[in-house]
Image 1 (tube, rainbow, N blue to C red):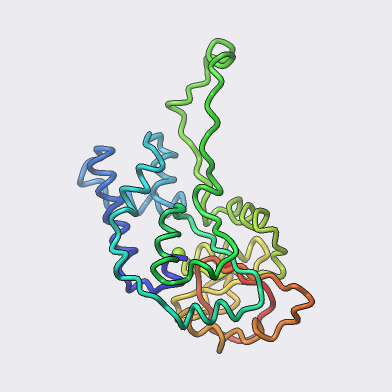
Image 2 (cartoon, rainbow, N blue to C red):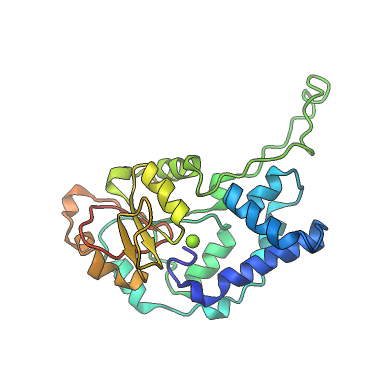
Length: 257
Ligand SMILES: [Mg+2]
């Protein structure tokens, strides 16, 4: 979704990173001199900075983090995109959003762009990381004193981990061999390819490792992947759009975006 259905130049990505850095500084009290490098290092290592912070053992409420980071984004920069809307609605395949962001952010983005009814569903942070079931205090503490739920680093499931890709494929009930995965992140594309998906890197004119196609803009999808509109409807080709773009020729069937 992000930087795939709309361009990186919208400024949301930069604003998001600044908000994450502010959260690290003011809510987690991480030293100011450490924040920028740590933010980037954790993003690279764990898929998202949030996942990295959790893995290091920082404790914070997931919803509060998302509200802080996404709640103040300059959503006004996102405008209705009737061209993209028409392209999506004209595709005969299923289309599903697959984003590391939370549900509220996905809803904001899709509503602002006028795309809220273009996708069958949204696989987001809450989908892959449902709230923990409260520990049953009746039998946990004495029975197993090594259980320390408040100090145990928690693992966030997110792209680009192959487990997250597999989970999305399972939840969406798609055949990866009949699904096209669009994403703006080269590492997500590499994982998508490893999971057996057809892949399209969006926002880049150059094909990256693991990408079958490259799209400068999602608006070029019809020129690059005319097959999407030529598919045999009887084969019920599945399309799941997951966050990226396309640019070359020959393609197959589904679309995850
Ligand atoms: Mg993205």
